[in-house]
Image 1 (cartoon, rainbow, N blue to C red):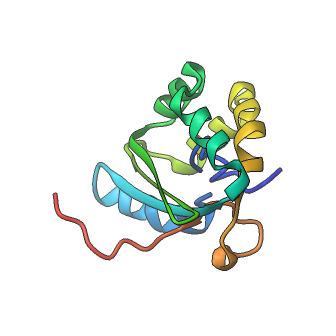
Image 2: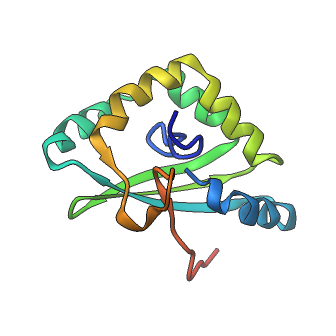
Length: 137
């Protein structure tokens, strides 16, 4: 199975690499922000957009149950950029819960073939984490 965490990306989801770093941030504040990037296969862009134009309610419900809020995916020049806020206390456990969900797994079987990790993602990383360089509340 691909990286547990950005498969999370139901639309979203690997963040194992930044998981520990952001868990530390979460302990310091009530919300941890995550940004990730992946390529979308050009021949699969329309399919990917169609899937996300009408996401499965059970998948959205699982995302919320795993303490993810304010979740967005953006597209530009062959890349998908995701952003979400994590409000829970145990990111790793919540991502494992999501990865174990059978409906989410079915969703990923549709979305994963549309995606391709960026070259700099690292071994086993699906969605590559991005470094936050600026934030204004």
